[in-house]
Image (cartoon, rainbow, N blue to C red; front, side):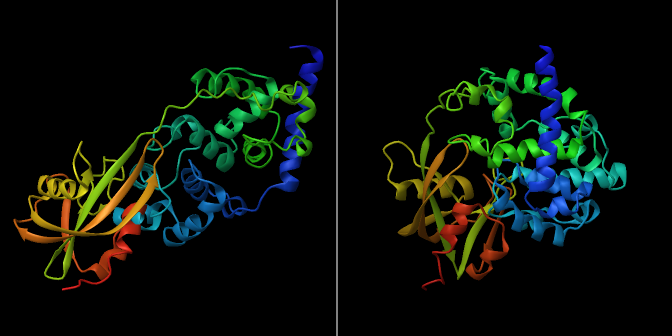
Length: 362
């Protein structure tokens, strides 16, 4: 690194922190950066935008104001408050972490990123964010926004998904974060990526880093960071049954280690090859619950996208014919009045289907 480059490297972190201290967006966890609020916010912000997180955060910390309160809560209540936010393993891990903190640390979290990595749901990025924002540890927090900013800033051509890029960026940022307020530096980097250095059409005219930025100087902001072509996302047709018996319907609770673990859903599954959806729901219900049903008309069809696949899910009106409901593919089955559905945490697609059911027509 040349003498001029060293001078510039020492300059821009201070400028960026000054900008953040003047211009940062107000957020409830920023006005009160307690370890608990920082931890909850960082877990919620994984894969989710700030504008979506804020109302969930406010409701969550109002109901569970501390690690101890969260540790004492039932997981079903935690999942219900999380409903609609997605990536439910975050909620389960947060709940497990609160219980571990309560048992081993009396509800007081460790102060270093290294120690924070021991808890479920805490990776390198989240550990660094909590340690720097809540405790002032000078460790860089490197997420997708920061990788994009730094790839452009330094003209790095390592692909975005390559682990070597995160290691490289972390190594470059470590000596810089030690020269400024670590909390404000990490938040400023994230803020720059979220508001200015966007994936498409970055606002370089508003960016104070543009005079140091290799991508801007060489007109390569559209080429950096290097993003490899994503694989085609698979699509599945799903059929589920709303099974009626004596004015009640059957719902199933997923195992906690499954995707969407702990949530309730209508029994059903993927459509088989050359199989009508009505056949799918009849087969899946018998395999999952042991029940035989009469399949009626569909209530509704909804589309939903997850991170690695998409689904089109149809719910059919079904009437119980015979058999005793046994949880063969879930951990629990319940016959409930349809009016009770809002009390159970459900995946978003199932919740939308639930809205189409209404009262039993019998």
